[in-house]
Length: 199
Image (cartoon, rainbow, N blue to C red; front, top):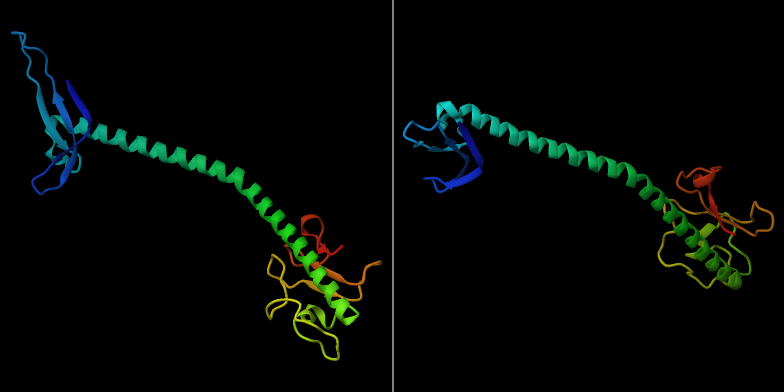
């Protein structure tokens, strides 16, 4: 009867360790009640060193080890795929919601700066002057006391596009329009794609 042990390592003559299995050959008991047990160290990297009668047993052992490892890999991949399918949509929704909140806060902050500009100048910037009027003095404006914003570039929304500014407003009851076109960058969107406008 042939039995094989779990994977075993032993030092070799070249200073490296070789991986293999200890294989025992246990024949039937002799008539005198004694049995002979033979041991081999079978290097799995060199199957030709196996005793001929034990090559099949060593091969079966190696196939069992490989199959188990492949099964583990497939299970892990399946779990990862399931987690990504469940978590990714929720994460994307949270990211979109966070950008919308940032856009609202940025519009509110710019609205406050525009109010300060009006206190100094007397009117809000025109559509032609735009938000650049908060950074550099528009031509013909005498009481400008800016810059009202830091930097040399007009503010951008969380999607990397400039805010849209119009004065006078196209909405009843408003003096100006200050808006972000949202994630699509296109006017006329609805729902999550709708423009984000000042109150």
